[in-house]
Image (cartoon, rainbow, N blue to C red):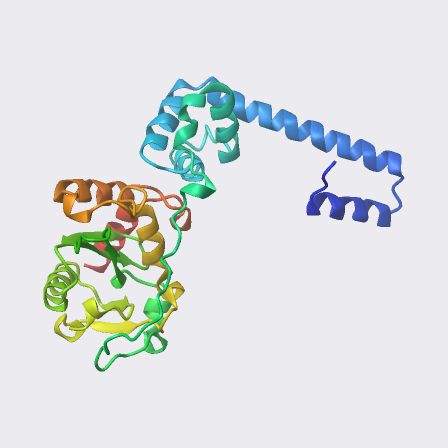
Length: 288
């Protein structure tokens, strides 16, 4: 039998307080019984609620994780709450056809490998160390991380991704290549339209003309992709729909807008299971 860390701590606590082995065993049996009963009740909540079942099926097919499904459902239906772990069990026992929509470890995109080599210098860079506290602490919207998603070998097309650090709201646009001038022109338009205050970028040469954007821009240190983890994580979500072996030039602007819409309308645990769109425009309205 496998004992978890919590189980071992419970046993140590009861031994320290003079409980006999028999008493400890009875407590463990009661805890196990209560856990099984709670699990059964939670699964039954799903099995007897057709509206919840339809909700689960719909959101799984949209790519929501069980935790996001339960979190958003519980937020909107406080009298019909359930634990996301029960969704796995209900799916396995009652709706195995939905199992393919559940994320597995193998589905999580891997980070891009960093290839060592000489990179073209970006002039007058200001490092992320000097980024304002308001941006670092995600205090307000308007502080954005940027990156690009590259295409399959032989296709120069890229997707520019910009993600607000506070709201996780995503803006994404497709470009035919990574040339610095059209990249800067596009980013300048987006910055003006969305009132972006700061940008945080990596050292890719596509951002070489950042000074033309007209926005305070800060650069991550070399090979430190975690310093813009928000956009890296969002790129991983996009990769579920645009795999690495696909050709971005074949991705229509309509399909890209659908992907962006879906991600902006998917609840996030870090946002209290609100969606990026809900958070972003609520804060936008407060600031105007």
